[in-house]
Every structure is written in structure tokens, then in C-alpha cells.
Length: 352
Ligand SMILES: [Zn+2]
Ligand SMILES: [Zn+2]
Image (tube, rainbow, N blue to C red; front, side, top):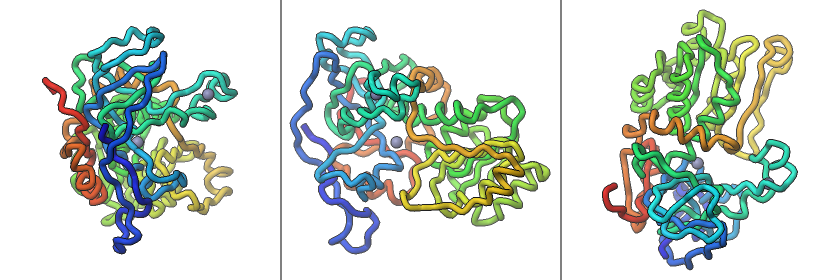
């Protein structure tokens, strides 16, 4: 079957073609179906902001390797013991690319996200088919298209961010970064009863989307000092909850300054693994009592992500769809940053 593989690691933006990372559509064998597994004919797999970083090989994987973890599709085969969820051939599904083992210390300690076996079943989603354990698979609601359904995984990140934020009615919230995770989180926040929802984002089209999704204020950090904007919007009090969904080392330093006394500051993006941020502990942790945290993946969030998915407005996001054969062009489009979400169509499914 056809699958997108990283055949040379390196930055996709490297001006030197010798050093530039390369992906290619290649033929790989289909994965074996275990007794508790299902095989899915992949309809769509979305490019995640982290995928170009994988091509840069932040985890040091051996080439060639596959990618793709935001997918939807139709079940074509069900293992003889994959019977716990009532999944059937023909079901439209999405799911979690990680399989939590349920047996290790962390799984049994209510911390699935640290499961020491989670990566063992991380099969590549940019493929014609994928095999997942039954526990990873969720049936999509009838009113969710396969195009929208592939966004279940990033939606689960927004659910997890909401779990950590624990927003109360009437709290003021700021989100830094208007990429998919930022804009999904914004929609979730606006369903929560928060007020003065502010998006900080340099790209105008993304600020416009934020307005549509319920932001009462948008700030262009290239045009206005972020601390001054926070002062103006909150009357000097700061935001009760601040999410960083930008991953930008330029943006993250300002965020303790715009967080209210006693507020929460959540770093919800992926950061360069050697970046260290200066933080005035006296001011922010001692005197202002700010709670600072982050998140890795989304444990215990998929059933609720499924509930919220039909209420999210994703149509405006999905502005570009490429066929699997055009993967290289799709990744070129991704790194321009022009399109919020790019989908790869791995199979044409009738009626979708
Ligand atoms: Zn992702
Ligand atoms: Zn485990």
C-alpha cells in the first residue's frame, strides 16, 4: 500500500537542497491485523503543525519512517476479539494514534499520557490503510463528516487544555497563537462562559477566524505591545487563564506578564527541546501566585472530544485538500503557513 514516509531528515525550509528534509510516497506492506485490532481504510489524514518537526527528526527516529496521526476512515476488517465496542465493517471512525496499555504504572495511576508503551502502536496515518487496536478507535457521530472527523485528535487536545484550565463563568481568557489548536481551544473556551476572550496572533486571516469563533478581542503582536493590550482589555488585572498555543519562543516570554494574580498559564504547544525561558519567580510564582503548567497528549479526552466535535465550526479551517500522491506539494503548502489545516485524501470514499 501507498504511504508517506520521511526518507531524509532535515528542515523542509533549508535553502540548501542537499540538507533539506524529504518526504516521499512509497509502497510499504500493510500492517498485520491482531486479534483485538481493526483495519481502517483511511479517508483523510490532516497535517499537524508537529509533522514538519518530525521531518526535522526531533525524536531522532531512524529513516525511513511514517507520520500522520489525525485521521478518519472506514473500517474494512475487524479482528475476532475486537468486540468490546461493537465496531463493524463499514463504520466511519476516527481515534487516538496512541494505544495506552492499561497495565503499566502510569496507566494504573490515572496518568495514561505517560504510558511507557504508548508509542508501540504508532502506525503511520498518511497511508491507504492503518491498523489500530480497538481501544484506539471511536465511531463518528452521523452528523460529522469524515473531513471533520479527522480532526478528533486535535479536538481532544482542546478538551485536555480545558480540563487543565478549569475555567469559571465570567473569567477573562487569552489565547496566544491562532493555529488549529489555538482556534479549537478558542471555540471550546467560548462555549464555557468565559468573557473577554482575546486571541493574540500576527496573521490577519486567523484573527478574522477568531472573531467568527467568539473572540471579543484580537491582538496583532506585530502592531501592538501584548502587555499594553492586556492592560487595556482587562483594566490592568490581567487574564485569569492564558493559553499558549503558538509554540513561539518570541511570544511565550510575555505571557506571565499578562496573567492575572492567582491566574493560570498553560503552555499547550510543542517547544524547541533546548529552549529555556527566563522567569521571575519572585514576581510571578511568589507574589502573583500564578499556576504554570503544560500538556503533552490528551488522556481520557476522546469520548468528550466526540461529544463536542459536532458543535465545532471546522468548515472554515479545511481550506485545502491534497491527494496522497501529491504529498510533497501538501507539505510545501503546509510550511507556508497560509492554510490553517491541510488534509491529505488517502482514499476517495463514496458519499463523502
Ligand atoms: Zn497533532
Ligand atoms: Zn501503559
